Length: 426
Ligand SMILES: *[C@@H]1O[C@H](CO)[C@@H](O)[C@H](O)[C@H]1NC(C)=O
Ligand SMILES: *[C@@H]1O[C@H](CO)[C@@H](O)[C@H](O)[C@H]1NC(C)=O
Ligand SMILES: *[C@@H]1O[C@H](CO)[C@@H](O)[C@H](O)[C@H]1NC(C)=O
Ligand SMILES: *[C@@H]1O[C@H](CO)[C@@H](O)[C@H](O)[C@H]1NC(C)=O
Ligand SMILES: *[C@@H]1O[C@H](CO)[C@@H](O)[C@H](O)[C@H]1NC(C)=O
Ligand SMILES: *[C@@H]1O[C@H](CO)[C@@H](O)[C@H](O)[C@H]1NC(C)=O
Image (cartoon, rainbow, N blue to C red; front, top):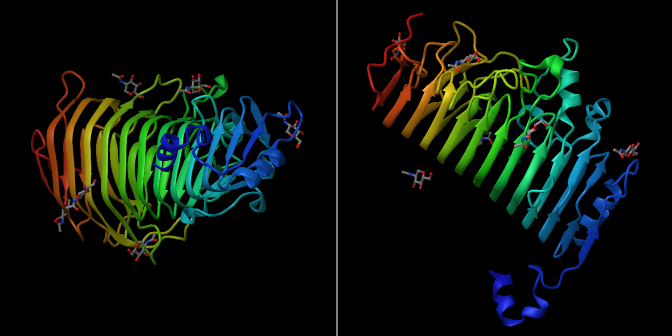
């Protein structure tokens, strides 16, 4: 608004959105050199009321970065190339811990307000994930939440920010996280965790490469995303409100998750007013990524506590309320729609007290691959707080030819499914 007004009044002086600001322009120092210092210096000098231009090429980033941006634009034409120095990054002092949930680590955190980071579809982050996936595919290096694998791009304490036309190639762990933030637009985002090691072809070695996790954040928009993953395409976690997602391509993995919720017994997790539209969940060739598990799914922990976060937990309350999913296309998905409330649970647990209500699913089309689980819809809510007002309209997901779609429901009030939905037989 401000820049267009001043453009009209004083076009000569107002070409950049930040009128008075300085501009810093960088190019990569070249092979063998470390770009971290020059990038941080440019952000310090021009990242507030200014403009930073990183020209095309690879910037060698060797240590953690925090960009505190205020009323500024960063044009990132190249890639921030995070050195695949695994043992270094896994030492806790070499990353930030700002996400809180599951104590996840971050090597690059953006904070601040009123900024735009535009990577022009030519840049973003190169996470060199293949080295990480190879490392964590070895049995002696198990993957655990909170183990220090870094999130590629973290937004923390942001009030008004835009990330656009931004690629994250080779994420070691989650591509994105947004925590304790409000009014953020992510538009034109690629997250790509695709194994190219022939020795590991056909396995899912890219667990935890979520497209984004949202936590303790309000008014977050996710538009035009292309996510190749072995895990959640989007994960809407506790205290995410007013979330809007549109035009999301999920290639492989688990699909769009609401959760997990209720991992921390001392917190209520609230997920409310979520609108998700135009999502395509597409099964890649099995040699590239064997999993395409759900279109959309909801998961909560039980009310019993087993161990402690980051890996264990449970016992948290809260609610999921008012979630609309419109135009969800499934390509050969294992179980297109799922609800389960026993994440991390054991037989005999106290059932979850986290209630799910007012879900609307409109225009669900495509196909289910029932070769693994003979379920098209599997909705198993907590007997302590049965799901209320779950509505399907225009449900048209085909089971493979000759097979009858199986619909499973328990502890739920649901309408609009194409047949009777019975309790699971086990
Ligand atoms: C990155 O910088 C380090 C020095 O900190 C250097 O050893 C390494 O070779 C550089 N990497 C690249 C790809 O230039
Ligand atoms: C994802 O990565 C793979 C392997 O590097 C590459 O072949 C593919 O083009 C990438 N896709 C996107 C959308 O960036
Ligand atoms: C979510 O917000 C509610 C209040 O609205 C608060 O009681 C709860 O502790 C918050 N949960 C988390 C995980 O921060
Ligand atoms: C449900 O959420 C949508 C946003 O996704 C919002 O526009 C609508 O007002 C909410 N409905 C209620 C009853 O709060
Ligand atoms: C269903 O999934 C399995 C396992 O990923 C795969 O082998 C099979 O080809 C898929 N079925 C179809 C019809 O694509
Ligand atoms: C919850 O569902 C289970 C399995 O269908 C059923 O046995 C149980 O009676 C239900 N409980 C309530 C409170 O509806």
